[in-house]
Length: 306
Ligand SMILES: C[S@@+](CC[C@H](N)C(=O)[O-])C[C@H]1O[C@@H](n2cnc3c(N)ncnc32)[C@H](O)[C@@H]1O
Image (cartoon, rainbow, N blue to C red; front, side, top):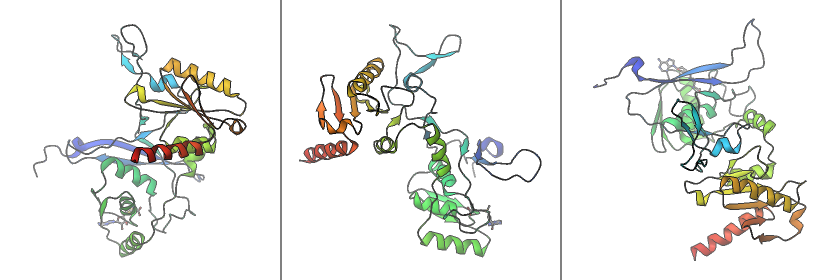
């Protein structure tokens, strides 16, 4: 077939799929992972890098500052000829590693279809997103209850499934013609919530605008990254125990250090009763709520269309 690389040469990665388990009847370490071997047919293969959020203990400096190797091969923060720190404002997060924490389907999950070896859609989602784009074909020659096929359908890929068992094929047909049920990861969310100090409303805005959440910085709660430094936007939520003046001052301080010019503050509930929309001399846009943010966005969009 003209393949120059065969066997181990086609091996790319070993992925560890790790999950929590609650019982362990045998003596020894609890078995709570499975191994996925990633192979490609040739060296020229499709690979979409997925990104995950920075660890909650990562601070703003670590996120923004570029790193380079010095003459001794030691990784240091990059500086320009005047010794100023060089920032990269277009960080997307941390590339996905080969250890995946994805919960196993619990026995009562709605996604369960009764097939004994059924895998979670969340797991197949990651695999399919990495190796294909919309419109590509996903083949699972041991498709069982059709998790790979159902996931491919959800992700707008075409799919082909093969299985020796009639029961599996019937289940697949049923699953693919009906409403595909997917269980989202409560476990992952709960784990993150433990460290995440953003309120539900703050998290909503962060998700809505695809912001990069920033932890452990009193002046910036999130940034909207951009390749062009001039377009980076910093977001701060006024805390309940913060006056608006304190809030502005903290934000100005953090943004000045980081060279971020576009600043938005969303006031807390107490301050919302005061001026609803204002633009102060320091060029911070101050909004009384995220709803106002959306309302203004719609006004801008309508003007833009005219
Ligand atoms: C681990 S299960 C797949 C489960 C699937 N990932 C899911 O989420 O439901 C493996 C499947 O391979 C099928 N199988 C085993 N030997 C086969 C063969 N020679 N040809 C086709 N399918 C086969 C089995 O019937 C079984 O459904």
